[in-house]
Length: 536
Image (cartoon, rainbow, N blue to C red; front, side):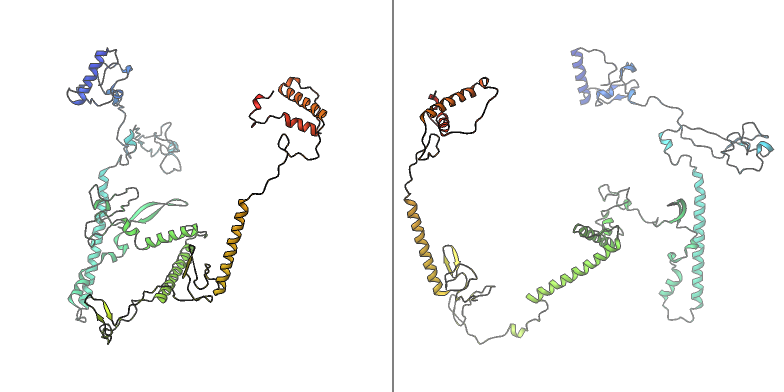
């Protein structure tokens, strides 16, 4: 696979090389070995395993893919802070004019400016600092713990132990003080129970201890960004260190997802645990309850109100948006109450009605009902007709029957007057007679019109001219003028066929005589004439 050179190979050698590579990939042949005796993976592509021609590789190898050029100057050591190398007795030329050290100049001197520098006094010459230069690699430049001395953490432990001892001492003093007060007042207060004495004397709520007595144990000094620049301020650490981190509650990989950037875990990490025992149920538990849900509803109301044309913005005027949301909820509640009262007033409320007494439900009557062997009612119970929810037998506009009591020609109407127009005024028998007379008259007119259309009127024969126009009765054509007009028409058509015979100064005459019009009609070719192909 990792060929050493790109020498010319015959077709047979190339075929064998391919078969060997396939066998190595299938595990039938041993893998190729490089210069160091390491096996080369046969699945590495050729463009990665082939060495460039300028390396002159004689044997297969993967060195060209590794970092073969190592820089010995890279180091992970750090500066030796505060180290001194030499301290002179007198001022040297080129040294710092203030302290006399050779490793820096007067501008970068870190000592307090002297009234008279070491250049003029040659006294109290400062020792030279140890100057070191490191060429760090990629990891060394980004190592934030580079140069850290673990032994310095012992001072942090000592400080913490001192704070803890002071806190315990203070709590113990408070307990002793409480016991003394209880012992002093124990003779007069005999009615106090033993449980209350134990609770007051032995249990001290450490959360109520003055924060100033805890020696600032819950404070963290940080750099706080302000508008005027960075300033050191006190930021309280609100997270209790004893609590288990949310991403450590369930170490299963398929459990709730934890986003390290936002430090949020939306799902419940322990869904099967007892809800009375777990203290954390996911961030969605807090987003869908309490003030978070109210704030979400406020945002949704502001968006919907803005879409409907109201000038409202949650970020620009939050007080206005909250006031409008409160008014909206009040109006919505009033509307809901009004709608409920209207429905109850119309249909009633079965929940508020008084229950029917059992004496009436189980009461007896004197009505006698007779049944036959099949269970049918013979006597004593009349059949009740079904009723509709609409009003029945209500006559309007002087009608004696209801709408829909008459049907004619696919139309409903009133039976009393035979009208098909709803909510019309009843005309009675006179209206029926007038309607019948109008119908008879309409039928007669229709029959007369149909008879007139069957016998068409004779059309007058008109003498038509050559081209279909009407010829007046008093039209007289001169034969000589007609002959001359026919010759002119033939000449005009001949000129139209040959453009070269058209004269330069052509004169046009808009006046057309009857003979010229007749000659034009006679010479014009009719496209629907079956004999047009035999002309001329």
